[in-house]
Image (cartoon, rainbow, N blue to C red; front, side, top):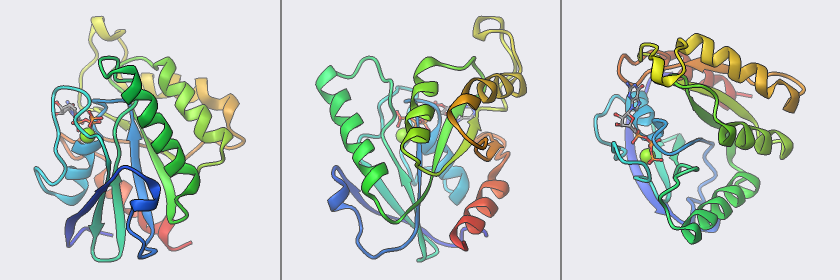
Length: 202
Ligand code: GTP
Ligand code: MG
């Protein structure tokens, strides 16, 4: 399940412009700054294949990265970035939602949740939207290397993860698969790649 080769293919703003070779793909989605681009780099063992930033709003298009010439990892813009102009925000929402519903080669969405802070309303809304629209989903808890801090609610990543799962229970018939990760320690990397390999072989 390891990544031997990874290359950037293209940036698209519309679902119709995405690659049309029919290869299966997995999309990394989540709040701005949750660590989507960092996770992609961790999965492919490269420091800067996907561009990351301390400032939210770095990724602004649907970015396709081809892995081992046989499947795609897709880096998406984050939601919930309050400083983006309203017009831009609705656009992002529109084009990512269109992508989730109409991209037929999308095997599963990987919804990233920051486990170093308590559950956010916008993440619960997003999870619920994906559930209601029957978009297959895996929950990826990020930043699990971070220690608990009083100003962040005073809970450990495992506790924040459990709270989040309890809160979303109502939206799903079965609880989505979930993985604890860190792009700093590479925790969860092999587990994610194995899970993606299993999903591709269905
Ligand atoms: P947008 O493209 O703006 O939507 O953000 P993103 O979700 O792609 O986040 P990005 O990967 O750019 O990371 C945002 C910040 O979080 C950067 O400063 C990263 O170094 C940091 N970060 C990402 N993953 C981790 C992690 O697992 N642990 C820690 N401690 N920091 C992380
Ligand atoms: Mg990004």
